[in-house]
Image 1: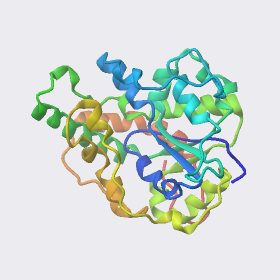
Image 2: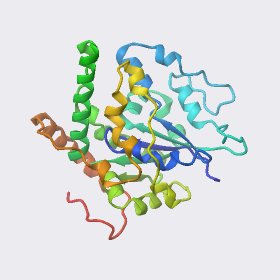
Image 3: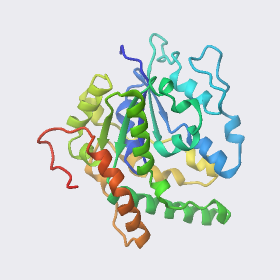
Image 4: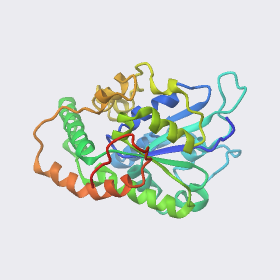
Length: 298
């Protein structure tokens, strides 16, 4: 693998982004996959529990970037050129997935948003229609808060659904920021397109990030994620609430895109309407495969 530029998949909650990691997790001899590295930092600042930040290692002097900033250790980890396969015969290419909102919250006012830094990555995006992502987020948040109640957590720790939590506006902001700063062609994948035409979409995505496509990337074995949320909040079962479909998936199957319908409050419908313009803006820039599927009606 000649191109070693770190790949970032920017996403928003409930966009099937954890599923999108699976094709790359299948190739540990080629890729080092990093799952949402900013989540512990967001949690630390929300709860004022900085024990999580203390667990992040100090960057080495030989690392390619050493900002005087609390995100520098993670950036150095992402950009490090010394990831090797188990036999240490060659380096691995980094594939990182993170939500755009978390990055913008933590990177504001830092060198992380500079052209110099942004240009060191191959940026890609995954989006999902808010008709699906907002409803899925509402159910995940409700289930999480019920788990918090059962565990006896204080009310101050409850999650709330909001436009910021939905994340599509921040995803649009980050897309424009990166596009204006780097001028690069950016791959945007729509989740519905991916489910309907997985091979064509993933093949084009791989072409745009300079990765060799293999049909084996379309199917995988069930894999459990590490219990990160349960560890962060000290509440058992949270990872199943958020990642059950992804863990049970074995491919980009329509089943992983089907959320059981319930009756939703008006606030959910309002959030869908508020975020639709941001989705539609990004949707027009998505990967398009001619004659592969019916076009989304704006």
